[in-house]
Image (tube, rainbow, N blue to C red; front, side, top):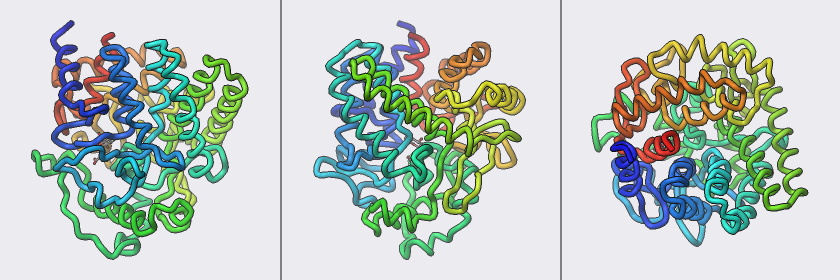
Length: 418
Ligand code: 9WN
């Protein structure tokens, strides 16, 4: 094993708690939803038993209605805001946040199943994954095709410039009378230039306090929450998740269920092509259901449509042009956003993220764009080898940013180098 691979295994071992892996010991001391999915992808090779356990623990945090929370607070920890009391949500089993994250756990479950060939694991997970994806369709879709989220944190790309017009459309005081809070994320190191601004945080916190005041009641939030967004990234992963669930059912011999989820994938794909495609930008964009408008920015979120095989061939030709002309002109692929608000060092406003690169490279291979996928993977490996398992990277200098010894960076390095 190379030194970097050994180090990756060590990062994951150190970040592992009882049955799950925290994203980072300095910034994120609990279990996070899509982080655990990426961790399971990497662990599938290095420690298959831990990979299966990671996903089981995440599914143990599922709400009775089928929502899988963004955060599960399995054990007390210091240093994260907002913690369990702030959210005041969860189940008899565990306190959680009141929002979800992209359903990456389904593609991860398929990956773990196909790596291990463990039929019992597949059969155990199938009904749980089905319940979760059904929740998206039943509770989080206005039209039965595309799905929506109700907090920027639920998209995984918290301070994407795409959310600015929605966050500008309300004053935090309109939805909560308590805006007192202290950020924890800038205490451990000086990350003020690399984390979301206070303006963003005021709105994140106000949305949490509104949700808590409404007891996380979906029906009431659908009426009152000012942030109801059909996110391009969540929808791409959702479409892929439907396909992957169908494949898992097919391998278990349940053709009826396999057909049902394939039809859902097709239906959601068609909805994305029709409503979220932006020909001028050459990408998918998110849609603000409250303001009834597309959120037209050139974020990598839209390019990840390829992960769900969403673009038609014509749309793909345009998307590839956009990728080449606007994203691959930086020294390191692939910046998370390009446009007037681009900031090379700040979080989801420009830096390169390894999970994004993993999703994009996987999707590009599905379209036969091997050269582009190789470029993105090659840059990712160069960054991880040179800078270590950082959370994100400056697309021009390649300098590591955010936390160090970050779990999904280590996990995806293991997957790429297997
Ligand atoms: C809020 C854990 C998470 C990732 C997100 C990333 C960041 C949290 C935060 O860290 O968000 O969920 O407090 O900044 O944006 O994608 O899942 O790694």
